[in-house]
Length: 525
Image (tube, rainbow, N blue to C red; front, side, top):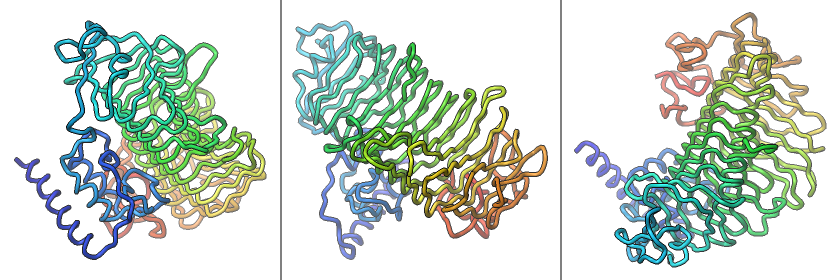
């Protein structure tokens, strides 16, 4: 009863705002589809979508930068919330769509009903039409598939657990320009090579509540050749998925999710563990993305890498938000959680701009004698430009190993402008220097806390020291190394600069709670 009353209040409030919005604020002409209003990609427009919208009100970016910008005007406002509310209760598949059923015990000569299911997913796809839902019964399906139909949903039936085991180099191949496909509740295991391959013109593709296990190469490979986005891959949403043991193929180290020439992408609430090389990789032409609420466990090399190289006409990655993620576990001898590292640019100098990293927790450890950095920025491509890189309100705890810095910045002959590192907490246990850099030109360091439990923290290497408003102090966590909430007597309370603000903390607490904003990912409550 309480839950229903809360939902009713939210809907009534949204309706009231709709009236206000329509009477006083002009709406953008763009009219989103019901699918675009399904913010959390669960197949129905519900209170969860409205709550997700409300937490983003006031944020700005380029047009259509994340799914919450449903009217694609670059500003998430009440009107976006109202558009979603107007579709409350609607589903993302049409009511006239058919239901097709597949079972390991079925036959392709059957009619495809729940009592007479097909044996293969390929058979169901071959006769499916836009709006249809294909239900997979529990069990193992040993075959690879090509998705050649738009507007279909492929999902598990009644929480059963179907497992797809590929038989070719790509388990799931999307045909060019296929769009509006949702894959929900399916497990993929022991693929011979790549698990999923997206190609030019694919858009509005969603993977939700899926599992990917023992994949030797990529889990999802969405990459236009050489990053040439003449036709972008757009609106890729990967949420609430789990991956484990990826990229461990003989002689190969693959990424879990690899993007190039892809825009308007969302990675949300996924758990990635025990992968051999990279978790998320944004290659050339990747832009307008949101990476939030994910957990990265036991990264061997990189959890998230930005590398806008290997392209002929768009050597850039831009307008990406990385927030509210947990990076934890032990890596190898050269581990980086976030690595911004343009390598070789074919089509000109690489550009990385409008990247925001905030409200993340970095609890990272290297193997014995190894090196682990939470965030590293360095370019192997000559003359790379970095602009508007903002790293704020994060908590860094980098332990063990040797020379483990919280951050490293290697400028070389690259250009940095309008880059900000502010309101963070940096703790390192194996080195007194928390941020190692060969130059601070183009950077503003403001109101950060630096702590070295074994002695005096040096803060930023060189002559910068603590930066403007920085402090050298024990942040007084609830428990150093495991619980990074602030205690009542923490010197980081109310100590953040109000020049850079965000509305909520890592765990959703509204900021500020006291006289000012708190440093780090948590707000004392």
